[in-house]
Image (cartoon, rainbow, N blue to C red):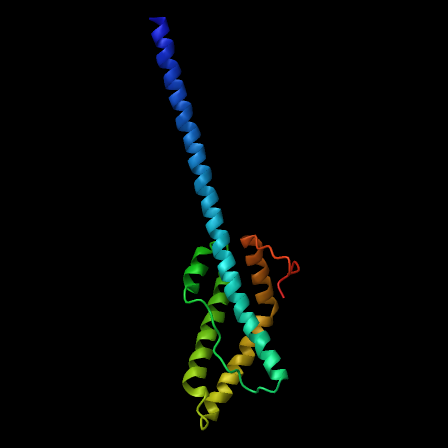
Length: 167
C-alpha cells in the first residue's frame, strides 16, 4: 500500500511541478512577445517620423538647387494612429505632439494638393509655404529630437551608420 501511495504522490508532485513550470514558461513567452511587439511598433513609428524629417532635408537640398516650392506631398504611414496607440510608454505630451505633427502634415498635404498648384491662388500658396515653414521648425526642433531618441531607445534601434542621437 505504501508503495502505491508513493507512486501516486510522486506522479501528482511531478504533475504539479509541470503545471508550475508550464505557467512560468507561458508567462515568460507572453512577456517577451509583448515587449517585442512594443519594440517593433516603436521602430515603425520612429521610421515614419524620420521619413517626415528626411522629407524636409530633401527639400532643403532642392532649395539649394533653386527649386522654390516643394514638388511633392509628405509621405507617412496611414496606420500612424494605431502605432501611437500601441506605444503605451509615451507620455501624454508626446502623444499630443505626435498628433499635432501628423495633423499638420495632413493639412499641409491637403492644401498643397488642392490649391497649391493653381497659378492664380497666391493666398493658398502663401498659406502652404507658411505651414511648411512652421512644420519644418517643429520637425527640426528639440521636442522632435527628444521624441525620436525616446522611440529609438524603446525600439532597441541599432544602426551602424547613426550616432547615439537622431539627427
